[in-house]
Image (cartoon, rainbow, N blue to C red; front, side, top):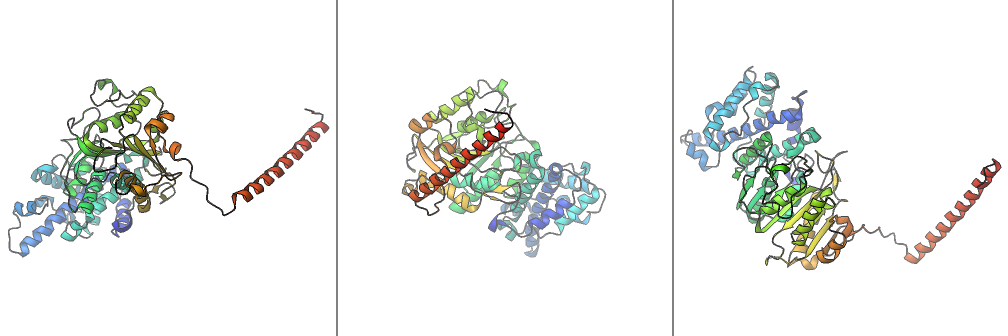
Length: 513
């Protein structure tokens, strides 16, 4: 996404809050500064939520130090040392960083689910105690993030998500690896429609795929009925994910710590209903030497120098019998002719696992200029709930979609997401298949036996959907052809005249040919 929240999601103060917080970082790199700001946003939220319940208990004459009262309302217990007001009161103290570390440690000690999650290095941060205190004061002057109304509107979740996006944009290629554009996440969830079940992301980053999936459930089913499983190799990003999910009280199994998913799969026996993922593109060093006999390589061992087909097979391996996967990949995965990769791609297609391929517009990602696509894989193409799509694949080319939000960044609009997801759902559904039509330059349903094999298993959507039709200018075809051939004849005549003139001039200079 653009880092700005879209449409009705905007809260009205994120831009001002970001501008103020960002101004304070001075020369500190965004990649470091995010690990100062985001944990403080988290700390303010859990403290605000605690204080809201605390005040309510006091007003009703009940014991405000009874932990069970907070647990019953899904609010973290915050010991006195961890309460935000204490930090605000001491914001100008030179030891404010140490006080924040103590607050984080106290909260972890009393909330086992946060153990080893919260950073405790503010006392040794490169950010001066003066600026750190100003950041604390800035957030202290904000409205409460934790009162019941704010929690119901997911204010902190949206502020947190907004900041993650802005940091990804600020870091550019240097550190946005944990961030998938929000419009791409929305597209994936609208295509897969995870109403309930087990959701898995082995490259979960800051947890955005989970958040959007559960929002989809809540919006369409009125409740969340899911179990969430994830893994992340970057230790600081793993902590961001734990905080991001904890803010929303999403109970997720992200393992005991960070870990490389390909080298050490935390959940080898997991079979998920949905895997919704954006793995890192074109990773060269992925553990090839130690994974030769891995059971995940159903269609062949991926090549040593590129992990793309390791990721694709990893997520196929983790699908339940009715499961579906949405995987963001680099476009090179669609057409690579490297022997190992082509063999794997042929196996996946011949085994009828490829449901849909979507070519994305460029400039969607803050952290890479590589063009991207989406693979939709399915174990349920003959599921009785849907139209049988056996032997058939849908290709969608949406490179012409999206709008530029600045000079370098594009986002898919809500209308774009609705059109792409609607096209897929119409093609997939028994009830609305009559509404599906191939559209030149945009979408086409093809069969493996004929078209895909004819194209030697290259699955670039443009090969199948063709070029979009030229706009109709209202001129009858016969009249247009007469006009164009007349103009062409005139150009040929002028070309001959110029040729003779050049020959004459060269002859006058003694250069005949």
